[in-house]
Image (cartoon, rainbow, N blue to C red):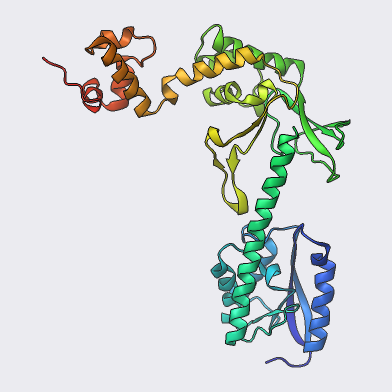
Length: 368
């Protein structure tokens, strides 16, 4: 029951959307609501510049829920600007759950700027469900718009966030591509209109990248052998860690080393964990900036990478074995090992649990 000067907590959340959702504007509106409805704000929880998509990144709301569930409250209600400030959760049941936690503890949530009263009535429940769905849909639509905008900027040759990678640096430029300054690790642009492009890094790093390509394409060293060679020579690696075959492969396979801007390599919109996209879905813009590896050498590296057995699927290995059978009419360990474009018999045995099992998978029965 609300009486004069009933103590209440206010929850404020500002994302990066509109000025109308600034912390100050929300607090002013909540104060007006409090005065006209007999509340006195005694505690404030806030999340500044936080997305409403998930609870994990919102210490203010998590603190509120913790205090409510532990009974650490000196208030009888929670005042929030509107339903979207409570959260733009993609699952509307999640928003309802957090409100239910508060209500179950005897502390109802009031939405100060909404046109309905949150009194538990059927019209109120319907309106909240609609508002929650609208809040979630807004985030989905915004995510699509942001993706389209980033895609367009990537096609213009501008870097779309993330570390530049070994051998490169980020250069801050104006919209007209006039250089401003090199960005150090962790630094970000301060003006929304500024852009970022990639430029070659230090001469030492650039030469090491070229050396990796030479070792792979000319000296025919494997990925592990290259990593071992770099470690033995004490060559500094990305982030000052040890060189590994996966780090070497990442360098050898990335089109940015020939000046291509690569976008859409991973997806992780709406708070989802990053997931690698198939290479066919990458957006690759050639000649976006100065490359540091000769395109011919890069192409040779790609062809050799594709031939490495470790990156081939089971079906690719079996198809190569079928082709070998068609050309020779028979299969033996020697025939397989003498073939230039087929995995060796030992590798096939390890992959399929024995050479005979590999024969069975392609329908070949060896006569005794």
